[in-house]
Image 1: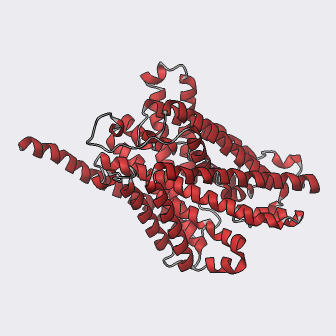
Image 2 (image 1 turned 120 degrees about the vertical axis):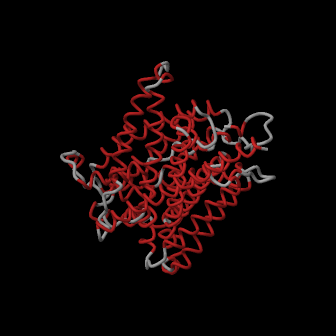
Image 3 (image 1 turned 90 degrees about the vertical axis):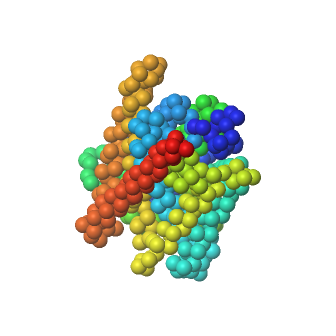
Length: 475
């Protein structure tokens, strides 16, 4: 991208400050969401097979695709730039639009996880206060803007929020796995080996597979900040490998720990990883672990918020530079050299969503469900573009001459198929949905609205772009 062209003073220049371990912890904090582990583990022991299938046919291809596409197009914008090069500006804009709008819905849902932490950090009184929408909305919006300001300071400050969050995620996962191992060692395993056999597949299994795929999204996030990576050809592959490996091991270990240490009848009512830990610590008489673990999970949530916020802002930033959105989004802070307008825009839109999600809703749970549904669908649409771009590289002249062509082709085909499955599964209502018809109408109408707005904006700003050279020629 032009942002790194030497001597070009007409476009913004970003600071390169992200190294291998910054990308590693960015991947960990973005991907490893321990709060979805109890939801997945509630599906029973056979979910371990679903984890392995998703890692092999979705997560591994994701890593291969990110490394290959970032090598071909090492630019700011990541998924936006890859799709634009392969399929043109319209599809690049639609891919980027789905990506940042998905995160705009997902960021508030991340902060909503903090609701369950209040009961463990501050006791029952604070937990009851957190049920108050006004109090909880104020806290989540405040934390959202704190992370935005940290990223505005400079990428060096923002990356430490991500790094600390990644370390907190890893530490929390290790505590959970160790507790599970101690419980198994002291009380034994209640599950027979036969429980792990995959005898049949049902609709619930497919629904769980969709959640697993959504939990594995995020290896591309570092490449969205391509112009801010030090030595990207070296840093990106290593960061993807280290971060992906750590994330996969955390998910597998944490899920197995809950399956072996907590009865499935109890797992069905779990709404967060701390409730699973609560079951273990009650048996072991080590309830004191809950408070420090809650703090680690809180740090992880704030780090994940920072990671997805900063990544989403970069899509707005490059769209502003390309003039498919207001050019103001392409401005950098005069002293900090960060895309502060884009960061503030994402924070503002997410704040509005937090406020809107409570309208007509009496519980935070309802607000969370409202936000997360669209995030899954939109993220799968953007990933469909990513794998379609990889498909064109793999089966085009670039792929034919590559020494790794069969690996790239496997990643492209496998990624496209599993992403398509994840997109379809996203429209299968969960048991929390009261009206299937209302759910499907809401999902379809929302998708049409989001994509329609994107197409309208692209048409409007494309017309303005075309008018500028024409006016210049007349002058």
